[in-house]
Length: 78
Image (cartoon, rainbow, N blue to C red; front, side, top):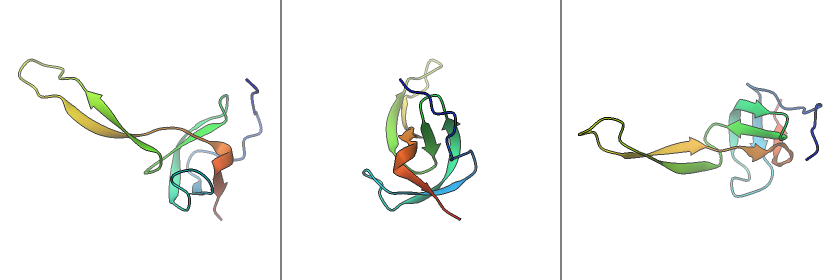
């Protein structure tokens, strides 16, 4: 795997998706992963995660999580 140390996107940047299932959507970067050349954007690439009950008597739940997308699919907005 090639590491990209010069990733242009940083945490807090506003971006627009230019490819993929969320093409055209806008969001803010919540986490950058430069070793994998990926970013996590709020409201983009949402997946459902099944949460097990922690305590007895508590119910399990399904929560929505934002998963990483490749940095080449995001474009920085001014």
